[in-house]
Every structure is written in C-alpha cells, then in structure tokens.
Image 1 (cartoon, rainbow, N blue to C red):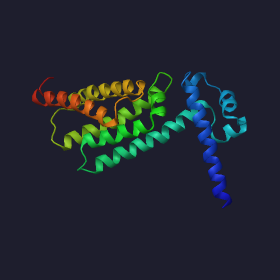
Image 2: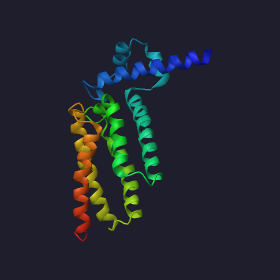
Image 3: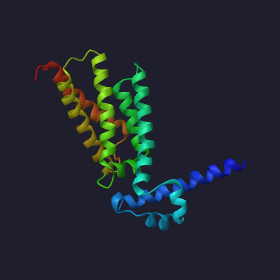
Image 4: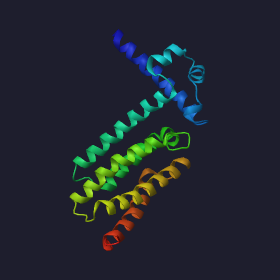
Length: 196
C-alpha cells in the first residue's frame, strides 16, 4: 500500500512539472526556461525537480522519448497488421494528436524541438518505403525517397497548420484531406514513374 502511495505521488509530481513546463514552452523556447522558473510555477523545490530531471532540456527529451515510444509502437502495430490500411493508421495517429493537442501544438511550434519531428520522419521513412516495396510499388531508392519526402513534409506542414488552428477539423477530416491529396500525387507518380 505504501509503495502505491509513493508511486502515485511521483506520478503526480512529474505531471505537475510537465504541465508547468508546457505552460512555459507556450511563451518561450526551452533554452530560455530555467529550473528556477519551473519550480516556482509548479510550487516545488529544486531538489524535487533534480530528483527526476537534470535540466529543462532533459525534461523535454524525456517527454519526447515517451511520445516517440508511443508513436513507434503504433507504427510497429500498423506494419505488423497487413489488413490495416495507411488511411486507418493515419486516422489512428491523428486521433492521438487530437487527444494530445496541447502537447503536440508545442512540440510542432517554434518553441518545440525540430529534432523530434525529424526523428519521427526518419523512422517513418524507412518503414513506409519498405512497405511500399512489399506492396509492389516500383522505383529506385532515390525516387522513393523523393516521393516520401514530398508526402511526409506536406503532411507535416498540414499537421502544423491544423495544430496552430486548434484542431478545428476533426481527426477524420484532416486524415481524409491529407490522404486524398497524397493519394492523388502518388497515383500520378505511379502513372509517370519514369520521372527521373
């Protein structure tokens, strides 16, 4: 019983630190946030902060690692389940973004960490291109890299705009929008695959 009480307190303390940190990230980049600011706003002492994190960058990295792990698990499940379509996977991913809009709005903003978006991009690139090849999509590595770059970066920009606009469209609407544009471009590519 005592261990459960401690675990609950630890989770609560970490949640308060993270929530406070995200509030500060709305106003300025992580490099301008101090431990003192976080502690004052969270009403905790510095020792409590240092018990879990070495500095604000470490806190951001740990938050990103948690989110990245969840995205990676969802990606892995998609690529293991052959019956699931890219559309269904995208819808699942956008529902996750929608449910965590405040976090992703910050991560995708100028105050967030651009390396986080790049990290997700590169993991997805290898998996998606590998999946395209398994499904019989033709093209050399260079061409498929360009196609993925076009589709992924366009999608990232739409996601950033969607988050900036406080997800006014539903996850289903934004998924359909990105899917339809991506599918149209992809079908054109398939019909003209000797572009390079």
